[in-house]
Length: 342
Image (cartoon, rainbow, N blue to C red; front, side, top):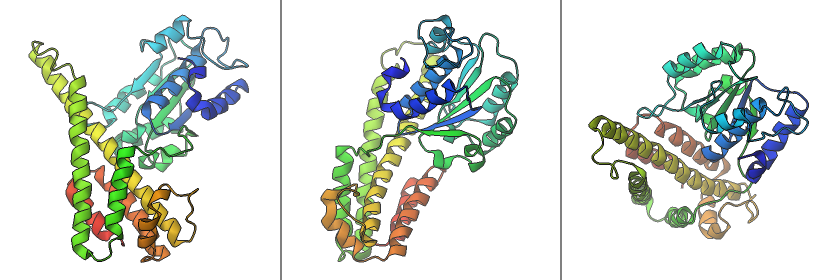
């Protein structure tokens, strides 16, 4: 798949191509956006462009991979000796310090068959603290002829010292697309939040709504991911292989559930942003994420001042960060809801 097949990434691709045509290449890039799949496609195409055999030096006037030479085909099939992909480990869902150390041993060697070594860290926000610090040392003194590409859908979780050493390209869309089922759920949540007569009991009703939605999400994730797993199709496979599949399935379910949970809370935060805009008298259908929820939005906003509305957004952000630790989910959500000003 070439750059021309990625119209959704036209803006970041244009920036990259202009930079390459001027023979300007960063040693580290951060591609951030909404979906890892799009980010991986962009990283793969950059790796192919830099090492395409059609280009004499990797900096053509119109940078793009040919997709047909041996180098491009190897990169597409993940068997190029100088192009590596580092992903979170299946069980822990983190990029560990051992992975980073193993990587560092290889990147300090000269490329064996390409102009540039290209290392892509998928979900770079999953670097644990030790791995991030080890990787930072390499970013500070990058090896020659090596390009690092970091991919993230949640760059707020990354160390500022790593972010500051990367050229950042945002690959998200300009318009927020909210799934219909989440929009419907936020409508129910906002109506309950607007009911000022419910008091503390209402807070726990909101918590119940939130937990029920998360339970439905988890059930759907489990059913969907299990259907894709080879376990059911190959029940006569080697027991060790089946055990590995089970571990990978459990890790995949947890990772996808966390992603969808984050998406749900992010959508909820958009509604609280509408409340914040209303408090600041900046609310309008053009700016609102939920223009159809004006009545409940303004009802809640009428009971708040600007500091409280701002604090609500901060509470939701801190709750999201807390949920990435080993905290008990229901407890973290309960504490967060009780802290909100409604």
